[in-house]
Image 1 (cartoon, rainbow, N blue to C red):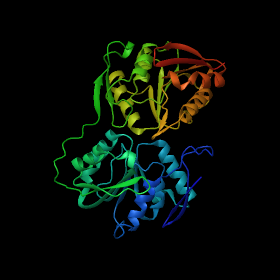
Image 2: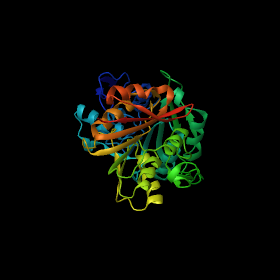
Image 3: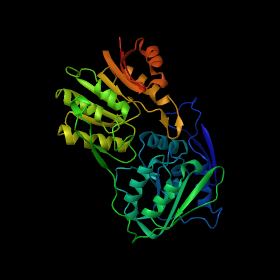
Image 4: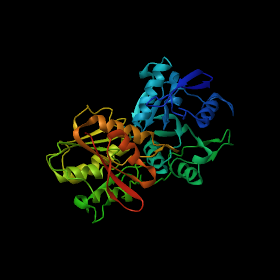
Length: 384
């Protein structure tokens, strides 16, 4: 549990899923700095009586603190949204005091205050600023926030190119603020996202297929080398009634499964709404109507009934924002084991140095190498 002290009271905040062993906080110095700025530590307090939009609020700290102003949260993260709901409940705030939108939803028509937590992905920031810019007016207050290590010259240039004149604050506790003045008649060009690219000719059944990548998705504009190895060494699909592409990204792994057997039902799961939009667009372009496919925002396999899956295909992330951690992979492996039928299989691709074989052997009692190259390994575990 994290205790954030604000002018609006002390808030107990957690990340999601809540884990008492989690060493990371649900807020940081950038959130604190932004809230202090809104209170008027630099000049007068910011007028929050209009429509307040918070973009990229990671675990709901900002909208929970600002709930009295009925803000709108725009987030790409299913986990972030669930954390926000939990933190609002913990603070005794009705959930409808905050409007929760995803990055794929239409934003409010008019935005009077735009607060931006700078994301790890510059592409996601670019896409979202393009989407929000037409909703700003010349009196809109725009304040970005991030740790010093998250704000680069390219970040400031992006704010200036898409929104208008931009400057930064002094650093405080290794955090910094960004101030932009909207220029409604600014010639910002078209939003370059989403992007499409053709798959190479050496990746099996999906060779030459066209992939759609929305901003912020891992390798949105190219095929990563781990997935390339996975596609070349997928298990047989025919006869598998239900296959899950877990942590689907742009969805090319699940697409390969769907194209391998037209009777196979494929569920694409990711915590990123941008990823699910990419996977769905990729599926529609290459496999037709999505009647035998489902696209599920979720925490790993938590929404999949136990014993209902024949095969899980997984390329797990090993970062949470800027922290390196295997916590997500461990949840994915545990969730997969619960969801698999007896005899079902989990296939995982990952960097060799991550040592996933140790975890899989501990969890499943077995693990074998299905394929490898100097950097990556494809592993197979069977639920006995």
